[in-house]
Image 1 (cartoon, helix red, strand yellow):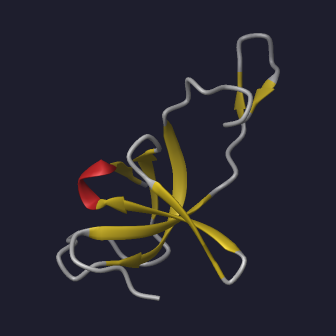
Image 2 (spheres, rainbow, N blue to C red):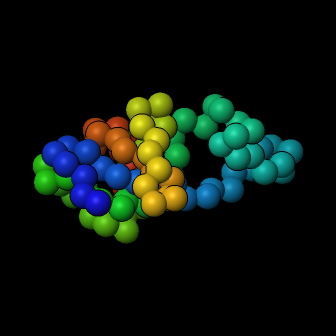
Image 3 (tube, rainbow, N blue to C red):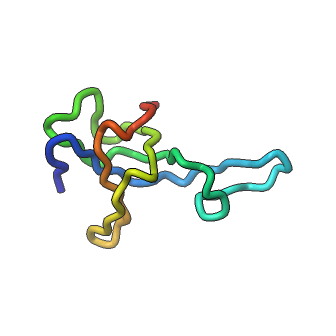
Length: 85
């Protein structure tokens, strides 16, 4: 699978976030967590400074969820990636 143009294919990474009380919050229990951690699976030919296996935070409101070979992935424009780790 290859992303095209300015798009990036991502695989979400499970992230453990705790609230002030010490309870673990997930993306399902806390919808206010807008930026999600993900691993880059594929980048389009117009995307600079990103490569496969890089970890990034992306705007979950901008992504499109897809399932390929039983794997849940997200496709986002490169402009919706906020931070590269």
